[in-house]
Each structure stands twice: as structure tokens, then as C-alpha cells.
Length: 144
View 1 (tube, rainbow, N blue to C red):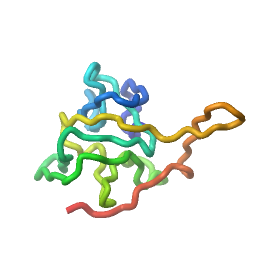
View 2: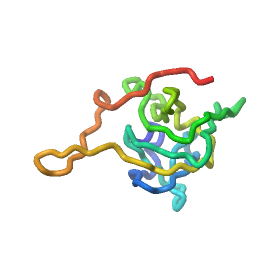
View 3: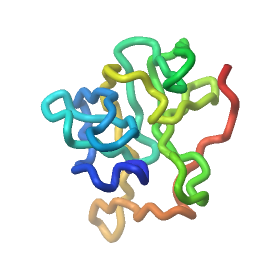
């Protein structure tokens, strides 16, 4: 999914195997993922999407410092989806810590390893409907 502040940006769903790049979208102050081929279109991830970053993940608060997480893999999810008008998109790391997508340093590359599993329904492949009540959420843990 794409964060609430990217509703005015063109979007498309992520594809397995593609490389996506962290960027700030024109006309917003929000960072997200875009395809290397078209940096103006936000690539949206479903909760549970697994990513492999090219390098250890770097994040910042945009004004004071940049930090590095000693991990190159993470899973996309949502933080506090029931609270409106706030960034919810986050990456959770194997140690249980998370970083909001909008805090990721620009220019980081990640490969989409796996999308959430689809469930068979009536003999057909079915993508479950994601609602605020059914979305996997990430535990709120401080990073630092």
C-alpha cells in the first residue's frame, strides 16, 4: 500500500524480482519507493512484502542525523493503521525493530523478494481483501 500522503502521486503495485529505489516524490515531503525506470510513480507494497536491500539500511529524521541498521532484509507492514493522518508504512527488520518508509534515506535500492501469499478460494487464486482491521501491524519499538 502507499502511505496516505502519496494519494496525489501516480502509483502501481510492486512486482516480484524488481528493483525499487527510495525517493521523495515531487510535490510531497513523503519518501517512498519508485521503480528505477520511472521515479515519478510510487511502487506500492502490500503488508507482508519481503525486501532485500543492496546495502545495510540507512534512515534519518531529515534534520539531524543518519543511522544505519545492520540488516539488508525487511518486511513491509503498517504501524498504527487505525490512527488517521499519520505515516503508517514501515519496514520491520529481523530483530523486531522498524523504520518508517518516509525516514529511509533516498537512493537506497531494494529487490522485491516475495509478495504476500494468495489463498485459494473456490479453486481459484484469490487475493485477500486488506482492511484496516485485518492488516498485519508492526510492534512499535524504539530504534536507537
